[in-house]
Image (cartoon, rainbow, N blue to C red):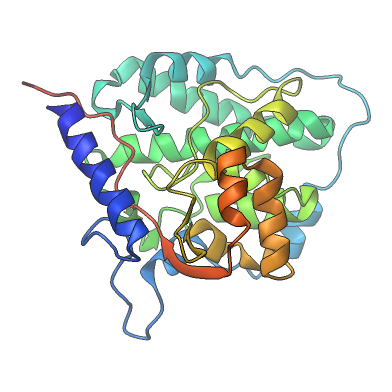
Length: 300
């Protein structure tokens, strides 16, 4: 039953994407009263007013590793509860997570918050922030489960990404701050967009293992290739019109122009996608599935 549901979802998603449409209730959200898309408003809050101070606080790093960060708890959690889908999308079996596993996940996140990040090397820091973001969003979903979408989660009147839900080295941080005020300005690496999972079906995949200083470079490249070559990221029709993930709408300021965007996509594209991009003219439509990346347990 679960596979049948996934198959129907997959067929509908790609059919509608190819025809420039949407699936009601699962993709492009209804407009707000001011005409702004909820997708953009909910997922990509503008950098906080204190963005500069946040960035400055986390800029310092150690030249050599003197401390080790243990990401084993997150690695074990992923090994137990991550479910790769036949459609190429990784899901979490939220309903199967035991109370003990949830407690261990919470302890892992709180433990990361006690680490003096400035005493870590750049590769250690990058792995630290990516793992913290991904583990934190899974914990937040678990705290409010069951939900249909992470957009349904509100914390003290703020959405999941804007609320200050993490404390690191004495400072309260939101998921948006980790992405926009730390990862993007300090590293300036477009691949980090593909490392962060938003707990949705439309998001880049949650990696099946924890990022480590020794593996972070390879995993970033793998994440970029994995997403870009999946239909939920890029689809090109016969007229050269691109249906792209809304991720590229939210991050469009990272590209100088359409050609710069195409160069980025081509860099990670497989041969079949590269061939289709030869006739690409413009992004015709943005597409995103906001449904929770839930590997639901089928009672049947």
